[in-house]
Amino acid sequence: MHQCWSFLFIAIKMALVSLIAVYLMLTVMPHFFVEISGHRITVDLSYTLDSSVMKWITNREFELKVINSTSKRSDSPIWYQTDEITMSTHTGTHLDAPIHFAKNRWTVAEIPLHHLIERPLSIIDIVDQAQSTRDYAATVDDVKQWEEINGEIPEESVVIFRTGWSKFWPNKLDYFGTDTKDPKLAHFPGIHHDTAQWLVDKRKIFGLGIDSPSVDCGQCSELRTHVIVGNANVYNLENIEKSIFRLPNVGATITTLPIKIAGASGTPVRVIAQYAHNHADTNSGIGLNPSILTIITFILFALYNMVHH
Picture (cartoon, rainbow, N blue to C red):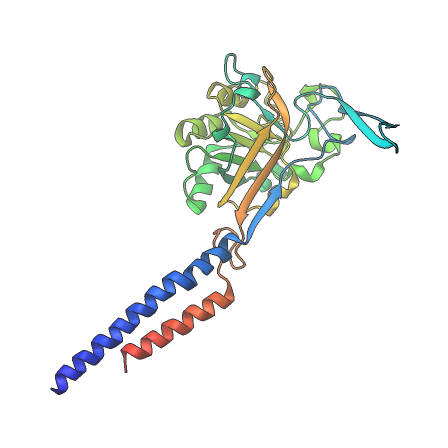
């Protein structure tokens, strides 16, 4: 009889444990996931289009003509402003459409939206290499070494190389290596064409970016990186803003919405990255609120005591 009561008591305890576990899953865990999503950070990776904005050294300057007036269309005057913009399509933070260096490939307006919205973002840091060699071109080994630490670059993602060149913006001489309009005198880091080919073939990327004037280095006069990615219908993002240093190497997404210009090879863009902030580790993209952790720990301790007494 004593054994029967013991088994019954154990069964009741186990039932209570199960009920509490279900309650935990239905009530506490949803709050846990809300806390994670509530710490999502948005970062703007675009330069402002103003009188100081830079463009490719052979292109025309950016100009905004503001037209304003006060007109009387009712009993009281109203303010009215309109504007006219003159610029190259490759001004400031901009997108190179594949047709830029590949005939019959996508123009700006033809790039599918799913290639542009919330793509996984991988950031490969080559600051040290760029500091020691001004015309450094990121290598396949740079990418492989990065993957050994951060994991394989996912397909259909965007890869941005972080060179540190954004620290020179908007000083033309420091940024381009020349204050002339002669591309032959340019000196800045880029991405080697073998690396571009590897990323296109092995990782099936959608976009390739850099925080310098071009994905081809200053002295890469054949512009083979442009040609390779263009032929693969991969777009470029150039002149990425210095906020790229606020982002983790992995775990962020990137959204790029270009002006829908028919037939165009490029356009200025607003590039937005988002990632889930974690107080302990910003690279993991996972967060845990201390109050939720305390509740979970208390309940688990209570369950342990119930089973062992």
